[in-house]
Structure formats: structure tokens, C-alpha cells
Length: 323
Image (cartoon, rainbow, N blue to C red; front, side, top):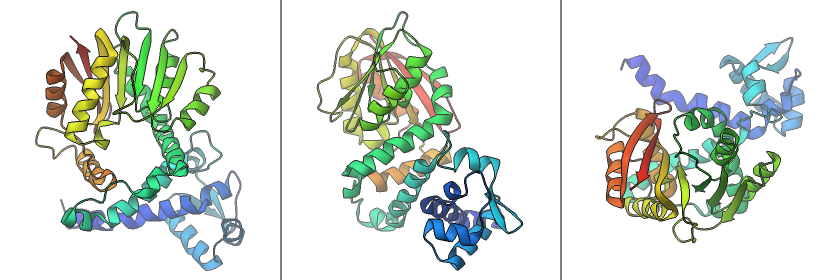
């Protein structure tokens, strides 16, 4: 790493926060498809003129806005992902990343004294709703390449999405396999219920609210999906989830895990290692696990024929069969 790269890493938060603050204020959505002056945006976003002017100049400098004839315009990227009116907007995902700013701000204390665990705010209905929407927005780019790695058992008919959040992967599975029936289980299913209804899949996808570690689960399922769930739990509870998934499966059924998987020394990919640290501050007990750890747990739980697949540089899927 060069000195310039080191300083870029050290100061990278400033550019990130510029984007997150603009999203929080609703700047991109206020601009929409037309051009707006700094004065107009200050009024619509409820800010001072000087503060808005400086923010807009910074956003234009970062290439997130275009300045033309004293008006600011969204770029094609901004219209697609940052304008809340776009069907591909990631405004809730950026909201979540801005929330994680507090987790990072308290990380020094957490490392010194131990993580405080889930913040009380995360238990509120509004947080859980926006968190689910953030995960839905994250799935825009990830759901289809992830589903591409899945190999379902022959003539699969029923699947369980354990910790399915907004139901993004359940919806993607139902679209890909028109005969599948699915059940999404999570602590909050309000968003999943609405999205499933919007997709006109309510006849094939159902939801059930409850604690993943205690709620009674169906049996004889062909597939159980654990998508971005294990990193919320410690090792003991992660293994409990795997055993619960096994009980829900029929013999020969498959468990599909989607995760930020680490290498055996748990230092790479860097994105996964950094995310693992964030989970320590955010959840208090969770972290990312290595491919080897997950495979050992699966073997101990009675699974076999484990297969690994890469989705991105940091995210992968692991497939295992109930023996």
C-alpha cells in the first residue's frame, strides 16, 4: 500500500458521509428528473442555504450530481439508484449504512470493553421495516446471481426461507421455479407480506413471524434457505440453527446458505473481514465465519455433499444435503 492509498483509506469516510448525509436529507429525490437550484433544494430539504450549497458542490465534485446553469441535476446513476422514486432506489440501504455509522463510532469502546449488543432502536417496528427494505434493495443486484448457484433437489415442491427478511430470495426462487411453494419465517414479516402480495405470489408464498431459534418449524421440506443469517449469531446459536434446518428437511433435502464467507485464517476477503468486525459492534455476538467452520458444523449436524459457490468476491453460497 502506498502513502496515497493509506491516506485515501484514512479519509474515505468523508466522501462516504457526504453521500449518506445527502441521502438522509433527501437531496437526490428532491432533484428527481429535473434541475434544481441550491435555494430550491434548501427549502424543500429543510436546510440552510449555505449548508446546502456546500453539500451540493461536494456532491458535484464527487460526480454524484451535475452542475449546469446554476442548477443541480441527477446523473444517470443517481436517477437509477439514489432518487427514491426509482424502482431500483437504494435509499433505505444507504439509510442503514448511515445507521452503522453509530456502530463504527462506538467500535473503539466496544473492542475495549465488549460490545453493547443490539441497540434498543433495532427492536422498533420502524427500524425493522426499514431494515427489511434495505435488504430488499440490496437484493436488486444479488438475488439473481445468488439463485443461479442453487441446485435444488429434483422435483422440489416446498421450501423454507429461515430468516427471510423482506422475502427477496423467496420471491426470486418462486419466480425461477413456478411450482415451488414457500414459507418465509422471520421476527418481522410485514414487508415480506406486502412484497409477496405486490408480486402476486400470495398463493405460493406464505409468511410466519417468530424467533428463529424457538418458533416451531414445518417438516419434510425439500429446501431450507439461510440467507445472510448466520453472521447475526454466535457459534453456538449458528449451530443450533443448522440443526433446526436439518429437522425441517426431508432426507435428501438441501440446505442453502448465503453468507460473507472468510478464508480459513479469517483475514480475507477484506470486505468480509471488515463486515465481521461491524457485526461484532452491531449485534454483540455475531461475526462472519469461514467456509471451513461452516462445513465442519454441517458435517457434525448430519449433512453431507457440501459444495461451495462464489457469487461475488466476498459473498458465497454453500449447499449441503441431509443424509
